[in-house]
Length: 264
Image (cartoon, rainbow, N blue to C red):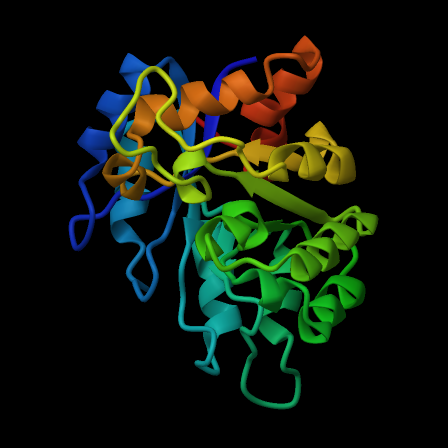
């Protein structure tokens, strides 16, 4: 099973162009990547161009202004142009009579959701309402369900609420590099540069969601300002080294491709 990066960005407006990502993928044996639109960018032409220039390498998760009345129609157009998913927030709501219109349209189109939120937002009743209302809609909680980006302020009780969401089979979780939720050791030490013990987050997510609903995502290029792309992959692979080959293939490729298919 090829290695798939489920969460990375490529942009001419912010971060880095796609060539930088392709370089990191090639030098680390990553076959495919899911391009996740950056926050606030609703022009998806560059990601579509990346798909065309590198056929079979990328899937395209688009962004759009869900508060616009024509957002569902726009999403249908983007799906027709090759998008396999859309990036929303747990609190994304449409104007008009149906606040969940954009979520329902994604479900109708067979798109998946890459969902950016804080752990408390995922644990909220409002998010739970979406999950229960659309049980066939695949929703992927980014950044370890928001816990990765909330370090060091995440609260164990909220963590438990997030883990309890595993009872919903349409929910998935992106596993980031250790640099998102582990404290860097100072002075730097090699080959493992984090303060130990490592928070026992990965085993708990593994036990709750299982490998078929976990997917590794580098968060490149922000990861370059933490441990770097190579370590964002290698050190997470080390954390799952004692799992079966089938489990590792799911976490580092199979799950992502089942949710965000990469087409030639």
